[in-house]
Image 1 (cartoon, one colour):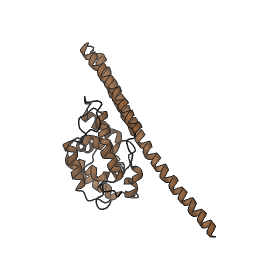
Image 2: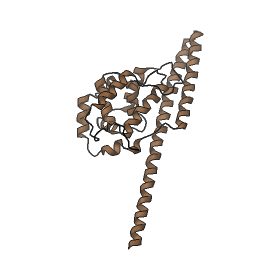
Image 3: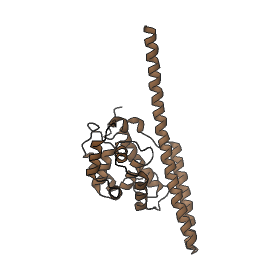
Image 4: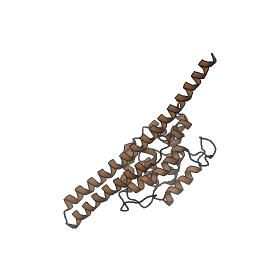
Length: 246
């Protein structure tokens, strides 16, 4: 079947992972901040991350800025969290960018420009790290030695497997348990313990999201290794064929 999606494989992964980040944080909708988390966490493939690295942007610092801005929600156990109106606006603004990936192909760099143009949580986090549309576009133009198709290509695509879905549910249960303990401490007017439980809840969430991102990165690595093996088998067959001919 012909791929009719306007997005590159890595950009599609970002759109899909935004829902994962929103669910892990207990939010009702996946906002622009969740989209940005999808860009900068995990395997960090794509042209956007290449440009941000070129700009010496600290990914962990941006991630913390976004997470602190979004805070922790109360809607745990959600699946298929929808995109917010602001996220859709950012995506539409990204679609208007002139794709250097070819007709109808929108990459992570276009998504970042859309996030910057939208002006919400993601834009504020990026601007706090000196990432403006002008500087980002200039850095992208000056970037040398990066193959756009390689950065945004199919080997960068990672899907949320059944195992990852189970890990997400386990993370949600852990955060929910921490939140119940914090609520019980507040009701008992034990505010010191409540503060401790809040810190534990945030740490559990941070580590859980990092674990999920690592698993997604490994999924990408497996895909890359499989592609390498396939190419090696083709090369071996070609060498054998040339040997027979001579």
